[in-house]
Image (tube, rainbow, N blue to C red):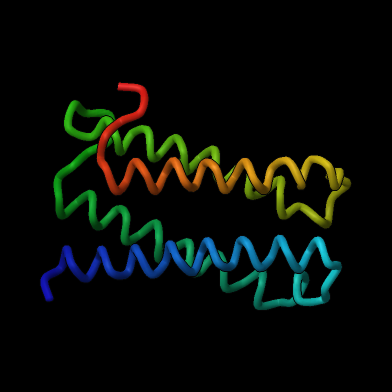
Length: 130
């Protein structure tokens, strides 16, 4: 197994875990489950997301496809999508602050739509805006 294949495998597994944890945490929060506030739900997601970020950076380094270049237009859009997803995710999972339930219920499906766009960009490598 070469390094690109290994990085891609780690990246894809991290994506699946990250999305699964996001959906679970939102569901537990909406059901007022104690699991939503368990210690592991504050520790594991950042660890998974760190692996996701590092494997993504590793893929950029290995493939030499850089954002903000002609060849990496799709990657630039993907990175902006990730930033939007992170903001929406913070809103959707913000149960400790005075964030309204309505805001969380709007942010969650919007985050999933942004995730779909990110995945579409990653699989097709065709920019939406370019």
